Image 1: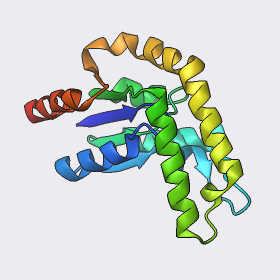
Image 2: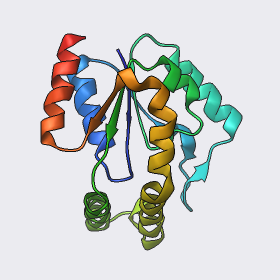
Image 3: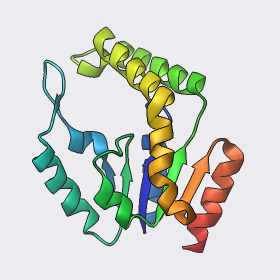
Length: 168
């Protein structure tokens, strides 16, 4: 099983991918971990060649779950995926989750670079970009894989995901 989970920032991708990973016993890989290099002063983008090499190693495996909003540089993963799960939540829900996550990071204290107002502003901008243009680009890019796409908009759609996974 090779599953690509995508959707907006704050859409629930990581939570869903973790559940799928536990259920199926399949390793999970975050595109954020491939795209970004953690740094105390703020994460830095990984060099494209290094990012591509990391992704290539992952997609060669027979089973994986990849989760993330990045889709522009993940063609090899898209080609090998058996199933695409697109979390298509309303923007208000994405923003509410971003704010809740930020509050949790702030309350946790410590030196969390994602718990800053700058990081919050970044995530809100990413969300705005996703809904303004990237969502359409994502669906356009996935159109060629139409038989392998499951769009989750509500809890009822989650039942379809469970049925799909039970068949595999």
